Length: 91
Image 1 (cartoon, helix red, strand yellow):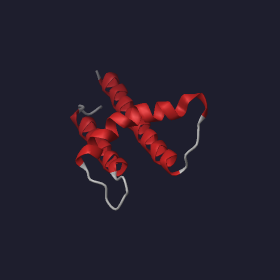
Image 2 (image 1 turned 60 degrees about the vertical axis):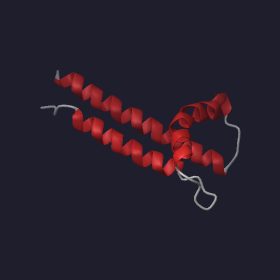
Image 3 (image 1 turned 60 degrees about the horizontal axis):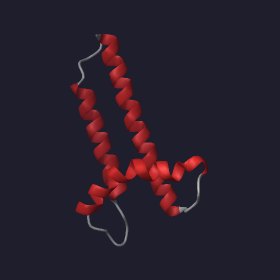
């Protein structure tokens, strides 16, 4: 049971790290429009848009800046901590 909880904790950490990297990639692509190889642009947009679009609908633009990535990163961190806290401690 302890090993399963440990693996689940590592999976949660890696999942949220990956989402954080994708959101940072999305921000960079909005600043420096470029075409990445192997369809990475499409991958980044298809993974980040379901996270950012609902936040954009609720959050108004602040001075022409899209703050949805910042809000998304804070929310992702909170959800990750909550999920890790729900896991039983590994002895």
